Image 1 (cartoon, helix red, strand yellow):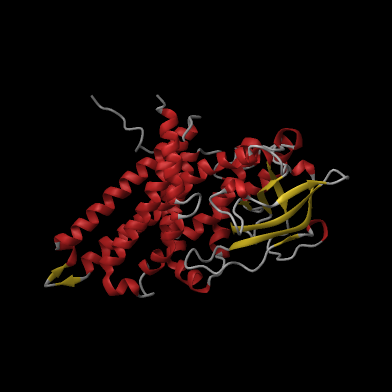
Image 2 (image 1 turned 60 degrees about the vertical axis):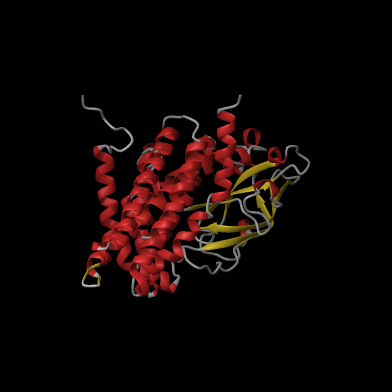
Length: 403
């Protein structure tokens, strides 16, 4: 009896899209990544082509000009982009989380106002949780929003590690609106903060929203990671995600929901960079000779290749399971946490094994693996560290199996 494996099969549409993005990565991303990584400059020509391909509106409904595809298909696309360069996937990932927040929690007016421009990539989004003194402990944020007599809210505080922080036109930012709320998360609200893309010090109606020079990083170059400084920034009440009546005090819950899909995306990025590491290892091990034969013929190298391929397949299956559960409307905090934990660690493992296979050449900037080796550690931290994932997984396991 033939049994369809729903966890590995792709629809014809998914196959076509993945093949298109795979080719795009081979022809446009990989050949140019070294240049933009070395210069730490924004890959505008590549991003312009992504806009033409519609990649900024993959999950946005067709009525707003997007493709209307599901999270599973998006995860497949992210894997292919990350196989090319994880910085490229970062540009769309943070944008995707913004569109997800709007689609799930936004008012009709907010959706109509922002989604059509977001679908084309004309308007790009970022989201912001971390602060200089808090990362994993989201409830410890200090940025605040106080309601003024004219009905607007004044936002003050600093945010940290914001991907697309400079070039975005929208930032979904979590701040405290009730300092005395207990538990603390009930006093948090998500604002849709507008600004001028590419401007470090905003003026006019965006005055008080400033973006300091981008943070210099080990890897994950090309895409900017920035601080945000709010100093008397006025945001209208209508820009509270979901509207003031429904959205005030709901920011923490909204952001945690978004992180669930964000973790699927980071998992897909881990699979993508791991896949590229395996490809490079397979090629190099068959080109390089030692002791009179290809190093691929040595058992020690074959063991490394076997472990890499096995972990990649496992990570991909975990990622697709979490995505498909979310698409089906099922709770997937546990599965998304498992996928993010395993896939990000798989990315690190495979990149390091590829680095070892390359030997001394892996340390040279002439070889692609050197860039991957600097990029991979990001995935162990973004969207919740591996330690946080283990906390989430352990907590959810106990909840599901309470005696």
